[in-house]
Image (cartoon, rainbow, N blue to C red):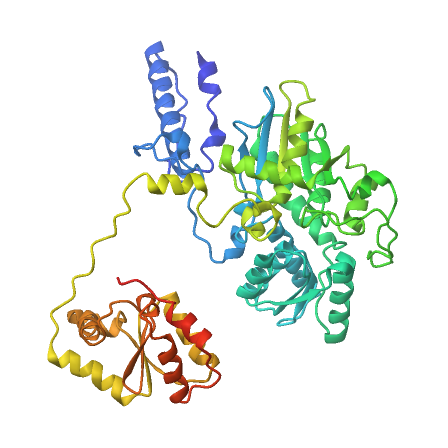
Length: 555
């Protein structure tokens, strides 16, 4: 009976500071009832510890939501976005894994900027700071297909380093926009110059301007950060579960080398599989890349060809990848087709609700095919490098329409198309009519507008392009909200023009239109003449017609 007492998991007590200390009182027990009482107390304590442990983990036992759909992670306070990098989840495939195979996805899209390269960016910059390789306020420049650049843009924004990314023009537009949104500069290179051309440009810029060049393809800090974070995270998350296979693609080689180092040390039975494009099989060719003393490549690889897997397999084998191969970290090389990568990415979204890009789809597609050859009971972890949002302008989304499909149109038409009730405008007063007329009379060009109306913005763009100064009255602006003043002006405006759509514009007090219903009023020619008569430059009847046909519906 004492075995139950001695097996009390005291290690559970240590991380739970709010639990009262439990003290064993050693004494002579006069009867078995004393022992039973102690066992009852132990059982109660264990139950309390488990409850606190679950609560600290984020599971709320008082919630009406089932525990299995609650996120067990605690919601933590962070002093900086940088401390949210890493600790990404391992998610088990529920529908797509072959029967009897446990497949777990390391979802790197959970990093703050949506990709595994956030780890690289933080690791390289902090390593450089620690070793005095970067000066305060020094500009950072790096060649990137996008994800490293986005990660560096975030890190540099937080730490106060200007950042310049060199990227081939062929990579997705959303990547360059994200970097510029984060305050970075993006220098675009000729796609025909490939990744090596990007690197050469980055090296030249660093040399010319004295900028810091991270050298992600050969920088040991790249592998170090994965050995410190990604690898241990996988091992910790798997816990007592065996891990038979680890699958990842290679770009810079940092994930491959760093995770492999961790697995070889803590999970030596795990086989490491690396994935490359099937039409750029650089590792499979066994043709080596030669390197300079600083680890940079000498010549591009002869077998490289353009492929759909953005961020994978540059036109040389990075030094970090070569290091992993030479160290015996790579047990198997797999090959992914771009078209199959896109199909698998879409299937993963629609069957498992997991949104990843072509990179993740490529890794998973070959991992599933490989898993079909394994004995039941095997387990596998697959890296999904980023989010599908990086690929909206790429072939991954080429079959995803922006407009309604025939099926969606049929659904729309299956019920009446009833408009919402119109806004009830206040009664027209003479004071408000006088205000409208006064504004129109005192300004050469007046645009009555809604503040965030894209049709109104079209008119503004036209007037700006032709050099016409104008006054704007946004009737829905905050300044006209009190006492419904904006709608009072709207009612007065409608009484003057007979129109309730926006924009409406006036020149020299005369209403010239601007709403869709005005475009069909038969005034195109007279309106064009009126514009020219009032001095607007370079206006044609075509642009006038286009302008008047752009309008926002009432309300």
